[in-house]
Length: 132
Image (tube, rainbow, N blue to C red; front, side):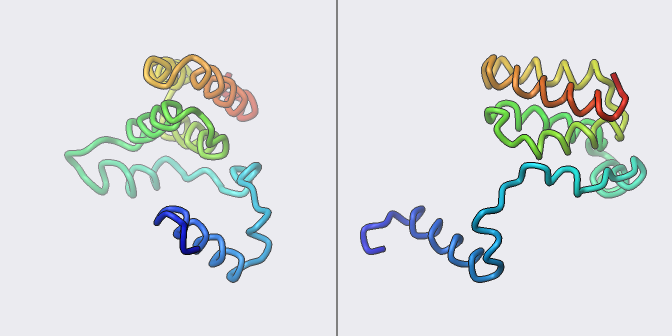
């Protein structure tokens, strides 16, 4: 560990901690985790991350669409997080059109491959939830 950069040392320390807390975390992947997390009701989202928390701020739907945009720009690699965000955005009142426009705009910054991946994930989520 003497030649490790601070990032490599912290990564190793995090891996060691995860292994010590729960050995199963060593082989854990987030695939499918979104199915274990229930969709929050719209009223709860509005109260905890919308105007209920900050009356002059963004509502939950806008916050979730911004989150979706960021996840797309980052390369749409976090599939479980994209699925959860789309599900919650729809529950918060986002339409299929708004989700698609958000992802399309993100494609200008994250690239067409990221946009395509995010669109496919979002489409799958909305199809499964009966929103298409």
